[in-house]
Image 1 (cartoon, rainbow, N blue to C red):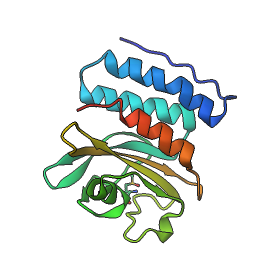
Image 2 (cartoon, helix red, strand yellow):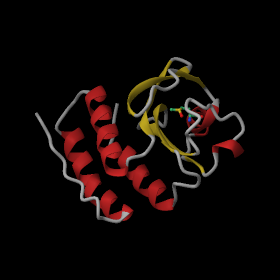
Image 3 (cartoon, rainbow, N blue to C red):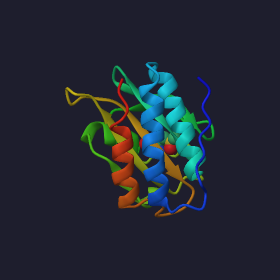
Length: 159
Ligand code: SME
């Protein structure tokens, strides 16, 4: 099914999230393919917010492996506990990083990335099956609105 989503660029950040959440819910409920759903979620988020990089890493054995994303070419594999993504996996918590230079062990896939928000994707058994990584070329780009709304969005995604 072809989809065209309209995101009004004059909306505030909170208003954009409010209109995006039902769009993403509709997209992922209409399709059973995990890869298709992650790809469309990354595309919707990129189109709405124009972040530098937004995408998924999926747990494969003892590593995170690059999944669907929007943005420049990225690192393909991240070990458990390494970088912001590996930390979100290990700690099972959202990582809000206002300045990547202050995060010990940050993995610089792109030198343009200045701040990050990484959310773990957790199944009903409490296991992390992936992470959603959002990178900005601006310092201190993300706040509690992003954390709360993105936690709601990742809650819509199921393996
Ligand atoms: N920022 C990540 C690495 C992945 S890239 O930025 C796409 C990290 O330190 O975990």
